[in-house]
Length: 267
Image 1: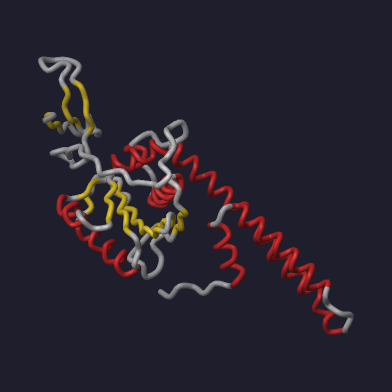
Image 2 (image 1 turned 90 degrees about the vertical axis):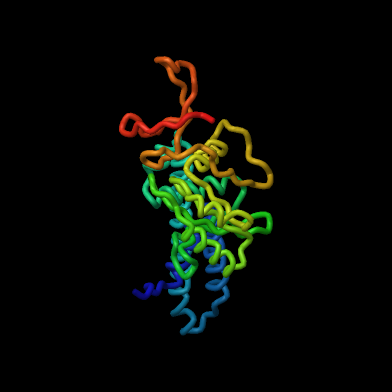
């Protein structure tokens, strides 16, 4: 289906609501000021006098649209901050909707110093959800909000193809699940970063209030080394036995316990 054509006013509104709120306020002031100049310079000729109210209405309308966009931007920015700050771990990340997941990832990298463009997978960009810009870099991000599924090598190949075609600096594939060994092998040595559920949880913790400030040059968390559950495939967590013959010893247990009782020994 062809994408619906938008008007100039809609394009202005869409652009401003994605920018910081102060950009919308600045645009409103600019439209209002330009409107004053244009209408003030009009002569008393009948035809110009007739269109003066229309010109004033157009510029004042654009100023109002810009203020509304600034308000929407401020609300969205506050919503993203709250969304990230209330995350407690992998389980809360996996409970997010796909849209919330993309917003959270964008906010996390925004706090690492990047300018973030939310594309939402639109257009002929291979389903890229975010574009990060900073320090002369352009990094393409794809988000996969999967609970237990593994992200295969086909998704990594797809992202690499888009990074190459767009001549971007690199690409990041973010998942709430895990990546197959084939996916990790393909990404090795390429300008690609695979961020699985535990690594994303670590990134979120690092940028939440009260933690150490991010480095001046943002870096990426390495994929976690926790083994997968032999039963359901979820990334496991390190636990300590509290009773029985092995009390005090550590082991890897499934985070979905007691629904899943998969375990692995600590090497």
